[in-house]
Length: 517
Picture 1 (cartoon, rainbow, N blue to C red):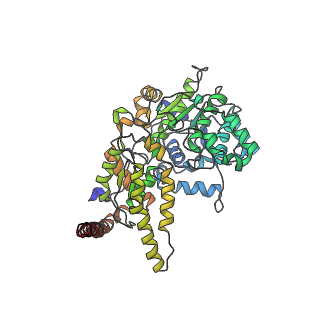
Picture 2 (cartoon, helix red, strand yellow):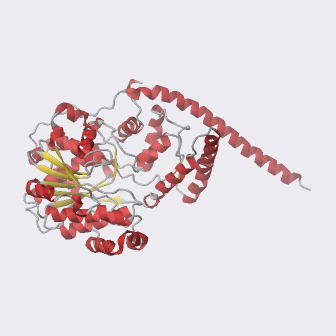
Picture 3 (cartoon, rainbow, N blue to C red):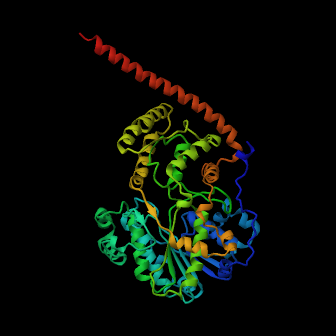
């Protein structure tokens, strides 16, 4: 019981970062420019580079929000539990973050001339992590954020006098029109270059561009993968003269160990599905359990990003005429993760740490037939949704369940392409980079996927999900377990009534048939 309610702790939390390793020496007194710093991966990268190195400063591209200045947003970031260990060990780390006001949706990233000059004069490392990750983002917007911003940043990087490394964060699924993906460029899969696509979009405008989404995307299943593939083409065509590389992570999920296990701050991808099941809302899943689950912990992604910049700087003068290297990052055959393993592990852990916010007993029916899925959601989602909305109406409360289920089905529908196809990846460059690290750097900047204990990882992920997304502390688990058992009894009663009613109806029908004259 103590293990279930204890604070989530990282295995390496007390590890001291003695500044002696090659990677740490590389970052000492360096100035880094990071886009996407307010995102999930960006936050973890900021925390790690500040905690593990003596970097001089990190310029982050950030925009003010309606009710928050950029300084307010950075302060809020540092008050997140993710930064607790950093704040304890390096209380002045916050002063190393320097905001650059801008927005990737704007031309030239919305950066002022003064700030551009600052970046040109002072930056040595560029990390381009910003992107819209919405699969159904309107094409015109996705092009602006994912492609034009990349091109603008590449042009800016060419002017940076002391540039040593540029890391472009792409996706393992950027080129998902193919199902075996190596660490190479797939520009032949595109019918247009990044530069020409952006020019056409500007010429046509938002309405016409968005109307032609299907024609432009071609075989790409959505605007996200299409624009990420175009951004890679931009890196190849515009960035060849730069010390640059591409990092292609799989599906980025909660931290493995650093700076604390199981940390997450969003409900993208599998986390949204898991949270929906945990709350008793999502009950039918369309998944091929024999396919690979290409999950990568976000802290390992940050470590690999730090290592690729170091390696890119080191190799820049050795291989100047080769295409920029690409680093795929997914579980490999040494520690492969299947969707079925993911499901079984979660089924075993979930009853030990339920939510106090459950609306029904959590369960999930997994099917690999789209037809069966559509039939089952009628009975397990839509009809119950109408029943709940009717009860809410009787109580004088706002109806919401049917609307919620429509939204859920729309969001999960965009994942069908990735459910129906199996992808394999090669990771020669990533593996070679890992083996090139010293034993100290391997310890400090671990991205060895074979070292992950998936059973322990998903246990911590569930604890992290309920704590950081559900806002439920570990000491609420006993209360949640009581609710879990009450809902289980209610669930069994409903099952008995429904199955009994169906059997009774069938019996009555059969009797009527045989008694007919």
